Length: 254
View 1 (tube, rainbow, N blue to C red):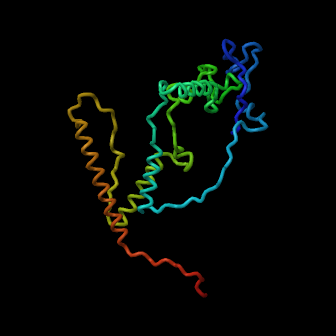
View 2: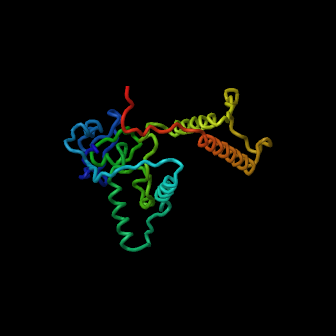
View 3: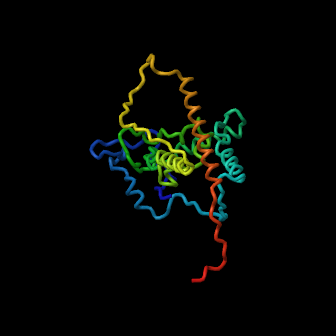
């Protein structure tokens, strides 16, 4: 990770960088010289701040959808993704745990969490997107909060980090896949024309708005109908004859 050096705190206590309206950035409180910008600080680096090395490589094995093995692996994955997600570090658990939490909180208080973190200012570096509302050494991110130290945080990367797609694009892909499966089974779904619809917030006390219980029952009934249609389409597709696989070890003669 090519971050500027953040091992030695340059500003602390009452001696903190101050905002300069002329340069639109933070300056040294004594010399009034501007702090290094993020781009300049990164350009001066000779070695990265953090290095992560690949360890022992493993053989990744694919999982066939719909198989017993897939269900077992998905169960394990779901179990460990949500394991202890609501548990936090209890201060009164033991003296050792409390002291560890205090040390962790003190360390994270002076550790930048991103390239836009205001903690960079106490190391003499202006973060990306610097503005006058920043307080040197104080970042609003949950990574620095004492009460959220025990939360595991994200266990997996967000979709756009590993697939290049947003959640809306993934949702559209899933809808297209289901429509293709239904069409292959002879189940045609009519497209709803939403261009003529007008959306507006519901006013309180509107007599034409159904109750919450009725809306929930309608959504559940719609989901059950969609699942039944999809399972029917899967059964029809599974019953279709499939061409025999080519398992010949030698190519056909010309």
